[in-house]
Image 1 (cartoon, rainbow, N blue to C red):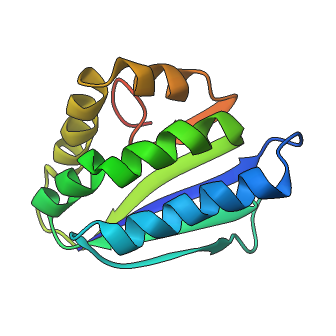
Image 2 (image 1 turned 90 degrees about the horizontal axis):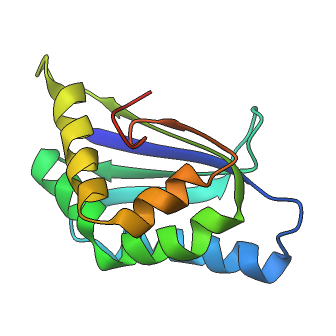
Length: 137
């Protein structure tokens, strides 16, 4: 299993309607992407972030499906410009010693095929994580 975590804080200028639209888009990912087994989108408690989302995916094939899903691209396009801080990372129970490299490769292929996404991520004021362009942080 792979648990894909996102933690983020919105820019101070983001209004309630924009915030809710972005959170609804994340929830839609959980509902519409077949490879997502379970998900949660909500308040991030106990840290420097406002919100978080976790998507549970069975394997690398499912992770690739999740990354390339149209609903995921939609969330990126409307949500990333609203964020001040964003961290993504993965937790897995896989025994594969190359799992981190395989996850990074899935992200690298996604960025290679989507220059607009690469620019959106590069424009974030603060970002680290498993999906950082050029590899994982």
